Amino acid sequence: MTHVLVTGGAGFIGSHTVDLLLSQGHRVTVLDDLSTGLMANLKQCEGNPNFHFVKADVAEDIAETLDQVAAIVGPIDRIIHYAAQTAVPLSMDDPASDVRANVIGSVKLLEYARRNKVAKVAFASSSAVYDDDAPVPVNEKSSVRPSSPYGIDKLVVEFYLDYYARLFGLKYTALRFMNVYGPRQDSKSWYSGVISIFLDRAASNTPITIFDDGEQTRDFVYVTDVAAAVTKACLDDAAHGEIINIGTGEEVSINTLAKLAIDLAGSTSVISYAPARPGDIRRSVTTMDKARALLAFAPKVSFADGLAHTLNWVRTQL
Ligand SMILES: NC(=O)c1ccc[n+]([C@@H]2O[C@H](COP(=O)([O-])OP(=O)(O)OC[C@H]3O[C@@H](n4cnc5c(N)ncnc54)[C@H](O)[C@@H]3O)[C@@H](O)[C@H]2O)c1
Figure 1 (cartoon, rainbow, N blue to C red):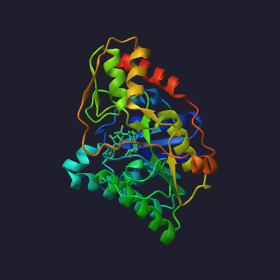
Figure 2: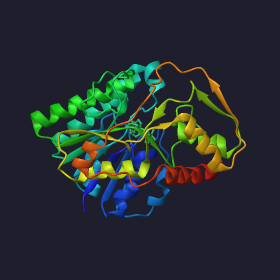
Figure 3: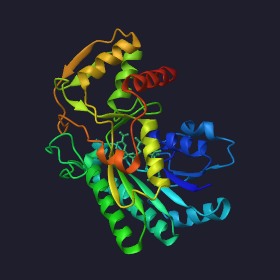
Figure 4: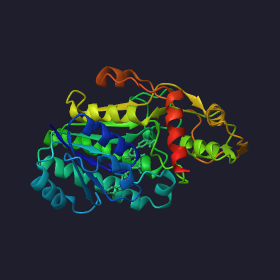
């Protein structure tokens, strides 16, 4: 049994990862400040003797908090680091807050990891690090040039991981996610993923707004597939020192997505178009070679099934 610390474990991707780790028989401690995460995402873990929760801000003095956790639950063997301010527009409005949560928080965690001989850290990075003009599909060697403070902060943390690995031997894998979707992604927030917003509109028969002409594309990857990739990267030392894109390799246009959402929900929602939003990239998709080779990763959930599962969840939230 491995004791895994999951920061941001009350959030969308984090809570699915906690479910997977517990189902595999591991011991899990979630550290989350509940700024966007919800205890409701973890209600299925209540009463599980292998599950522990601590409410804390990763950018505060977490060493003391984690020492207390270790004294009660046992030493932390491995870490999955999700805790972050995740809204790109908010990072543009208040870059300093973004640095605090996303860089300072990460550095405090890495400092804890190296001082306490944590075996490995898996870090949730993002495709937001890539140059918008990089040819698609992107791969891990594509040029990086983030167009938001959020993307800059993710890239900075990747450099810190490399630094900690070279100077202190800390093992790590950084995973750059494409667009993740699935149950528990907040559909009510302005900053939500497009899938949860469209399914919410379709399920409630309200208008769907598409920015630009709708022919822009994204690589949508289902949340349990992402949780599986991250869990493997954390528990397996094989991909140490590597940066790996996690997506599906398939491009879906926003027009296709809107039509699928409406069909699937049997909805009367009407689609309208609005001007493109500044900063929205035209095409986004990754190659899958590295994830396949180093993590034996292949997405298990088809887009049709993923949408259906997400719609079912969205309906429970209406
Ligand atoms: N959802 C995506 O499509 C996507 C894409 C690329 C990368 N990511 C990354 O994956 C990770 C998880 O994202 P998500 O979509 O589940 O978002 P989320 O907002 O649901 O999860 C983030 C979690 O971190 C917690 N948190 C935020 N600031 C914190 C702090 N200072 N201290 C402790 N906890 C804090 C929040 O309460 C929340 O539970 C993030 O690092 C995000 O940047 C997500």
